[in-house]
Image (cartoon, rainbow, N blue to C red):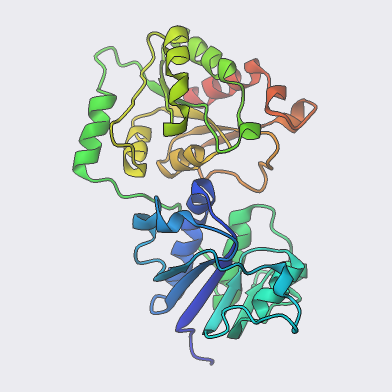
Length: 329
């Protein structure tokens, strides 16, 4: 049998928070398959959240990060400079599927190259479960681990550790209620405007939840603080936790105090799923089949089911019905 790889390179593009959160279970699976390997993460075309906000979560999963490597399709030709010319890896894993970029990455010196591009034709190995195309991004990533290791992956949702002080801060922000009313999260933000359901509809859902006996909890990120006055005007009885020092761990701790939540296809949506919050996830220009959050109970609502791809196609009553259905199951 060939020796297990001692050096592994993971090739990706650029990762924002949501991308990184989705990849955490993949990194856990890879580390489980190769516990002794030195794993380097390559952000070939930009930055990755694994050096900033997600750095504590990948400690022990990856050992080094290369950013802004400027590696891409232009380096596919043998006449162009070789990517990472002074390095060699036992195993290179290509997580993207653009053919020229894959050819360029294959030029990195390696012993084994794994890629699902072009139906695994450029890969030295294929997964034992077969070469069929997986729709969900996380399933595609697990297939890469299977191909590299020759063993099936047992998916485990990524967890984010929360210390006692952070749990206490979450209880302060969302205290136990004497009236036993359940907290329900509303997360109207997203990294791109095209991925946001209209704010006024989120607030209308909050009014509906308040009338139904729940406590809306509006979760705003640092870039959404301009909405505070609008939120308070529409939902005077909502909870609006605005910590002085926001963190992933505190968001997870707050999430664990929610009975359910509504979010766009966004980083906070994936973070709430990591906190095991039952979730209604709203999709428009992105595909629900490719980017589903790993929530324990999930209802996805797609703009395409209502005649288009813009988020305003999603009607208010569909979201209200979905969150009430989720809360009652």
